[in-house]
Image 1: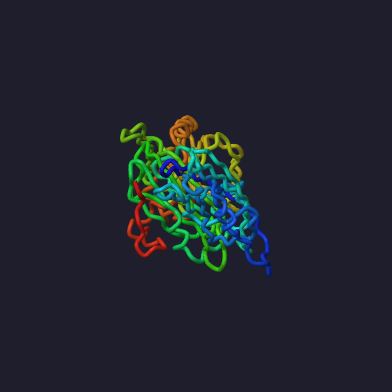
Image 2: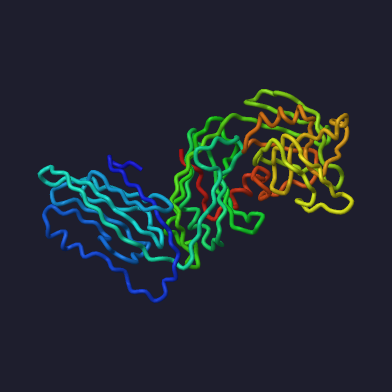
Length: 397
């Protein structure tokens, strides 16, 4: 963050400990610094221990001087932002501290005579008995398809969802209308996804900001993350599979590239209806029905299968199915996957990337919202009702 030429950066090292009946925080006594005409004042001061996480770091310039830079940093999970007064004499943190962290505050300033001064102070924050982090996707620096939501899965139950949501923000260029919505992931963990009202436009630049350091998620569980994540939306590659006609149509940037013959799931194992997103792709994978819970007469072990594009964690793939040669476009015979000839499967594999939507129509049982990224199968009104905020706000520009 840059504000009036002043950069403020921070990273936090979380160290969970049992606080027990520890002594109260040893906060600084700033009068000693103020007594020195050329002193920079940092609060909390050097050596402060067990500083409460709701403490706001404050820095003051020497008398008659100005602050030129303030850096609040650690080795852990992120940044702390701050604001500089108009006269450049005071800097105040605007985000809370993380628990169990060791911070270093580095200050550069000028005194009344124009002399450059530097000062550093280190302090530690009070540890929390319980902390949480969120595993987020997409990762920074990645390029994703037009359907990719932002998804965060938490490693601890979030009792105060609104507190978390208020400290998450998404900005994009061009701007979009988008909202966060809560759900449980397939393992029962709290998960929040952000998606636009419609697919992202190609070449959109997106920034996720997670200001969770020091945030109380309820029941005394505190966050430790401060993250800024930039990613990019690539080209529009949208695929439609008609399970009744047994065809796959691939459209890139509004132009139909090809319509392919496919096989889909047979009766009792129908391919999921609805929109799924490409999760990953690998050139070869072993497909064994035991990994998806299919045993008995329907059990199978296909050995190494080529050109595999994963659509759901439950085991839906688009892949080569050479054993169906002569049946594509005629018979649905799989256990839920979408089969192609080896040549067509390789072509499709080369066209798609994570986040590209694949929509199946004329099949059965719409894919669940948490089975991968089934977010687009929820209408907008229902999606916005999943926000923890009374009036969920769209992303900023």
